[in-house]
Length: 383
Image 1: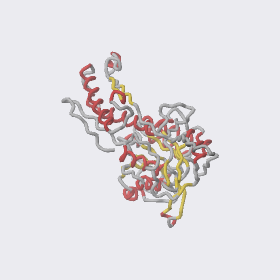
Image 2: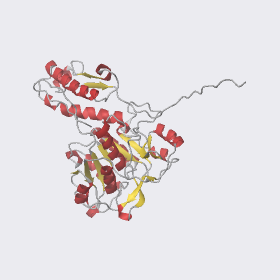
Image 3: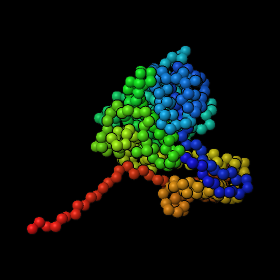
Image 4: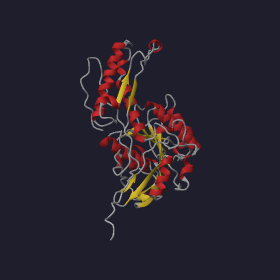
């Protein structure tokens, strides 16, 4: 996403410039690398130097490569290993135990200042996925969930069982696995989990169109893919999409693309306000940006002069986004609002050192289906 043009603010008020939107965190087994901290990488060469490169025993290296190949540029890798560095599968109980320890207060992930996409290639365990949905919400991040490698159109809906918990809005589910060349097998085709491809596409779309644009459609081409483990047709997509299953599809005139943008809370029957990936991710971006961008208010007197400065700071930020086309509405007053006053911050809040900011916005929502109504003009009657 391009830089926001921010208006001049009163003295002592820091501009809100917006946080980075697509810093990925990859977690899994690698042959080398530290297990006590995550390393920040800016390309696959960094991964090879620090974690040993591709390894046929692990999906992680492949997914990191797919991320960079598809437009990603900034990622952390967190290595989980068994005793003496032994291989550990993402669906092993030991992996899940180690995963939880990473996110506790003072854990290895706790030291990462900012990430907003989480990938654990090949993780299919429902309980672990629900736990990671909670961790994603706590960090204002978004979890990309892989379907099972053996999932088919007939079985994939059943794979959602147990994966739609209270924090499902902070995650999305993608089907099927992606077929791509394996450099370790003379580029023979092999199926890989979709998360690395999708994370890279999210980063690419964020950079070119903004976090409010759905990472799906004809712009969401999967670089490096040669096909999919399962081919999904229009009728099948029409059944799976309303169930919050984002399909990856092939079109002759387009290529291999992401063809869905729903969160795991996006089943039509749920009626969630967080039905769509771009709406939820944009809200997380706003929350993190405003939180980070108003830290100057700490220890300021908690009264109307401070609230007025906060309103002004947030308003300038939201106006800049409005000018970039981030909201519905032809005028700013129909696109967003900010409230920070005696109603949002009560005396009890003031006594507790808390200032509350309420921000509302009208999100852009993706057009999932194009419906045509065609009328045929009748010709002159036959004589």
